[in-house]
Length: 61
Image (tube, rainbow, N blue to C red):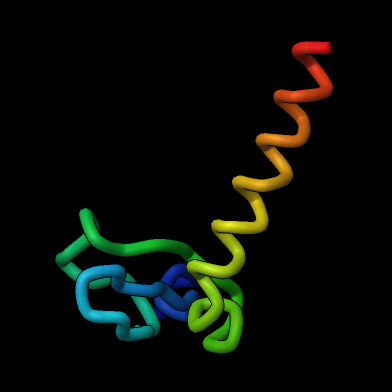
């Protein structure tokens, strides 16, 4: 098994979490190191977006 086969992904189309790459890469978020992180993919992305927005605001001052 390749290393990437142990990683987890979140499918935004149907809200499922899978381990290993799947053919539907256009709707896949990840990789994540574990199932719990993949299940929180949307929360993680939202927090990263907030952090990036804060950094942009600081840059533009």
